[in-house]
Image (cartoon, rainbow over all chains, first blue to last red; front, side):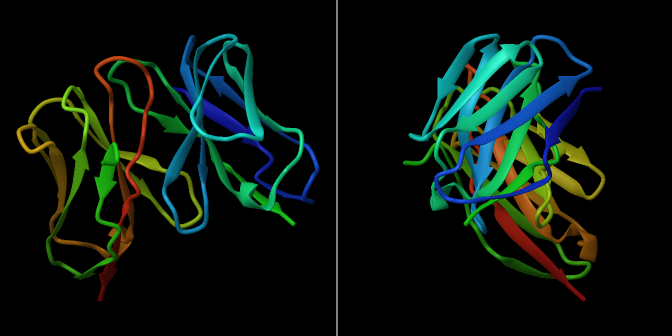
Length: 112
Length: 110
């Protein structure tokens, strides 16, 4: 079975600082990878997904970006964080087709 | 209309009772469906997969109504440990965009 590694578990960053969150996947190859964000008390918002190296689909954010430099590595970045970027960031992996998502443990980001 | 909609609740359920709630979806071509359970400040965990008309796993039953485009989750003999937020996500017929509903919060009380 696959394992999704995310780090760090918690992060406190000042407004305007950069961000880099990394996600790596073990136990599968050529997965579909996803970044979700969950604001306090809210649902999961899809930010980005990727079906292969260098292939990124962006759903919402203006000041966030994602990259997939390797098959099982997915990175979420920002050049300048906003207060509204605070939330619980979850990386997820799926085999595609009709297979379910598996989630990492998440990173809780607080922008101050 | 949102792609996936869920009653946010909370559903306050006495221990031992039955609770059911729905997830409606807009894409009629959705092929399969997944229910996830999310505890407070934790990542979602897969609860159940639904590939046809429904699925049953112990006290949990999922039922798919394709005509009305919703999937339900029923929990029988509720336990205190069933308190959580339940999220649904349909898989698209084409493409790989996976959009979750906002979740239904269930609180089981003694």
